[in-house]
Image 1: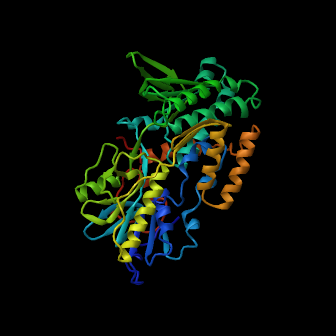
Image 2: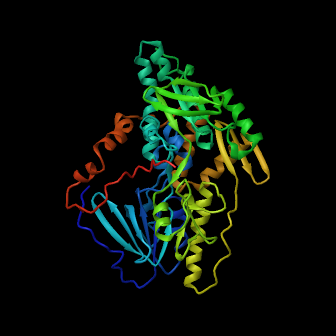
Image 3: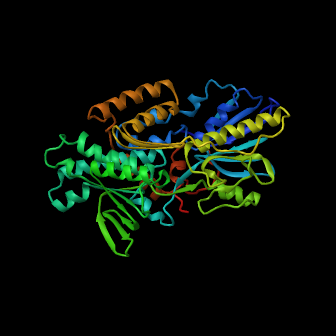
Length: 474
């Protein structure tokens, strides 16, 4: 990739139509852009990555069920039929609420985008609750890079165990610890257990993959606390059936290359030796939340979410809409549906303003329910007043997730890969490389200027050199 002198084609646009800038290509940003398809506006979507990520299925990429392409179609491809939409790649580094500009940077190139309406849907990253050093040894589950790194670590652990001769080392390599008993942690632990007990059970000669130890840790006293006691208990029982050790009331106090330390509710500190640690606890809103709070005077909570008006706009700035994981309103959960409904609401607010119609009623989130898979043919679902578990919940989960996967091609290949994994024993995506495992750590050691120095072309000396891994702690 090469760079070229910075330009501002958005600012120079001469269509005369209102300019809508959308920050983020996740659920909130993408659905907002699509909702503006027929509006008389020019839409610019600024994405930190070139793809739209279906984050709820990241764990299936990490455990070899799906490929990254099936859950992360190119944003440009998704919006190619929308003539009023333009997609640009960049990390947003500044928002000037007075001048109404958004500044983005990518590999030394800085671009300023002018807006008449702004939708900020930059999402959230992993939070380590003030212990960012844990990220070196316990990757999160927020990006394709995270999922591929974890795939390399999980499958690599079995390969290294096959070579080991010391039983203590084999036990360390075949111990997998998932921190966080929310939906992501439960799904991840369940799939690692199935991977060890079904997919890999006949693939090795020196080790027995079914002896792998999968531990699910959480400082909370319940599994899936947001699902209620009935479904949480059902999930815990099913996890136990497939061999997952559920340890609750256990707070992680330290993590290193060989394992982690855990403090139990009685104050006792113990150590678990494990090569593979996965962090599925806690989220931190994009740093843009704090920036918007500073610029507008709006309050920002500990997780970096900015307080918004009932219509999802910044106080004093009705042209700035904040949706999804970045906004703090009525203690809404950080789930995809909040972002989707918020993005559509913001798009409709813009359209109504252009048409001279009165504002909408305050944003109201319609809770469509929560679901989590535990193992093949087993899930839990909390939908309105109805609670499902087992096979029926799994079928509901299957249908709902297929509906929200973007693209017909992705749906077809996803169904095929699910058939291979759930009806059979296979995993179609088992490729793992050292680059996947160590690439993130190597780049962090080299520093943010390394990638810029290797791209060629002119550089912008004013481009900020900051950590953009989004592994900031609350």
